Image: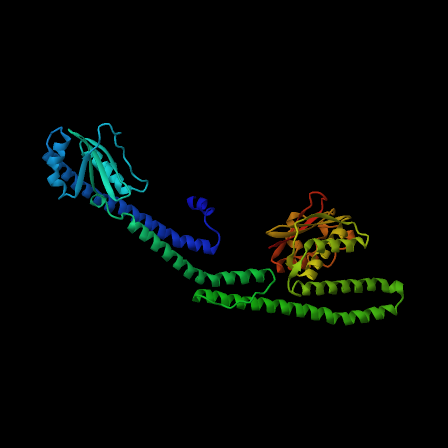
Length: 439
């Protein structure tokens, strides 16, 4: 359950995930080393050095005795100040009481202050000025004494040096590792781009590179792409050849029927016309969306031209929502054929049709709606299969068709990396067919 909740915060891209896997251990290790260094080494060393200074202060106090004369107090301490590399002086009685002065990044100074505050009798304040000195103020019988000594006697000269060095080299090694990792991930990204482009009907030049596993996957992709292309080509040639060869006997049948009485030949002519329509549908299905390369197309202009063509045929086809501006890589003739098929079905099984376009940054949606009987939800999966006829769901008096219209539209949508979605029109009440293509 915890990991399911965490997944929504995990990066999606391969580069981001790889960077996270690389950076997290380094950051964790640096934090761990920093905490251990500060808590166990830096703090312990500072405490030991402060303990030594406390012993020296106790020695000075013993030598000075309990005199309340400041001059005598300093005179008794003077022989020991020079060997201990210290300097001393009293704060003027009318001067403000000294206060602690520590910078925000003075971690060792706070350890020193806390140690002195706990164990030095009469402690007043400490100061860590920028001149690398340390000032200690504490009460004596003669007044508040200011003791000056080198800060290096209490704290390390550069306590942050190890941390800064560790962070710098950690960042440097992270950058170097990321550059190397990026070179290793680039072949995977190119393979993903080639696969995505092929799924949308485009062929990007690709050659396997990178690690052995990536090369194997790239070679398998190229073999798969070649097999699919051969299969599409063979299907197209087979259906085109069969359809083309059957046109000749159909033409001879038409010529033969022309010699017979019209009344007797009428039923046979209807059969021949139906066979001719079936062959034309075969040819459209065999061509599919494999002709031509995708080119930038304005979907609004495409839909407008298709709708105007149907209006010239006195069909009740109207334009719906037109939102979004720009072009999309499409095979224009194939997409036009898909729209023609959807509108043809709409006006065949209904009285009105409406076509709309919605273009966003992520997708293109072409929608065709009608006021016909629609298709039941349970039969929509069968409706897009080749040669499927759903007469119980549609008006049979309008002609059952060949059963390839929606299959052709599905094939074209898939060739563009999209899909055909069937539903119910909320406004017109009939079938709603959406061609959705990702960008």
